[in-house]
Length: 377
Image (cartoon, rainbow, N blue to C red):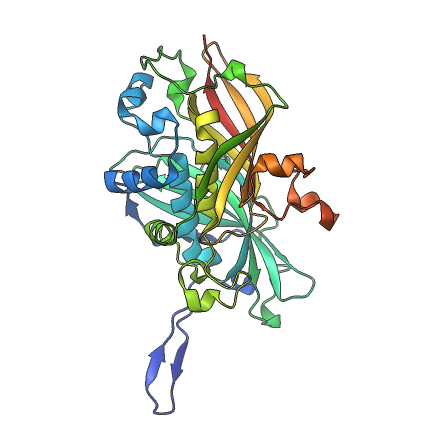
């Protein structure tokens, strides 16, 4: 943080604190222990459930979670990821121009209501752009409960503006040897109780979609849409402690690319997953990993979100469950089925498309999502 101490014409001292960092202030190997610390209580879970409308039973039903062997229903992984992203803004991205990518997001241990969580981030890479005005910062963020359980970890890349201090170039700064990272390998592991045989499910009703029902190449265009409300995205951005002014400060945001506040990307992430959940998560047991994710376009109040999933692969794990990997995409204001019917290459990464005409301007989210799925037998 820079205190920005100044004196005005009347020689009155005033301080304008600055949070986040410019490109020159990042050093490979640096670890930032973010100051936010939050106890995740039942009220937070209710607000998130009321917004995300996710169908995954283990995160919604304490009775079902206890059948599986959990002591209570776990906190939804995307609630934890939203906290981790937001906590890191204070030190990493409050001066950022854009969030560029997600990678290796995993949830090795369950978190429960009553746990207090905090986070730290390690700088993995700093790459100045050729113009010197900006650059890409690569960090790994680890979210821990108060007993030091790693409940969420992920990598992300952000585009950060430079302060313009040529004497503090980041190009040659950093570790010459591999970094000793905090915690396990990124995106690794899941709760140990899934290593044993699963009890039969007692619920009489269930959503469609067991492991055997998915095949590589299948495309599912999820029919439901979700219009983003003004008060909802503002309240949740503050609940998660995201302090980037582009999301909460209208005068600041008017000079940005959208001309108004942009909806925080972690919320778009969670809403897109939720839109897919009735068709892909009703028999899911755990969100194993998210990888290769990005927001090709921004979302503002009033946009309506839609989702589509393509099955990438299905891998048997044991007699009770298997892993299903989807390429999940989100669009705004046009249904994925309409875009596909019009010839859009919806499931190809937008960053890999060299032909501008091939890009899908309505696409707002894309990621690979791997889910532990219950078998029908």
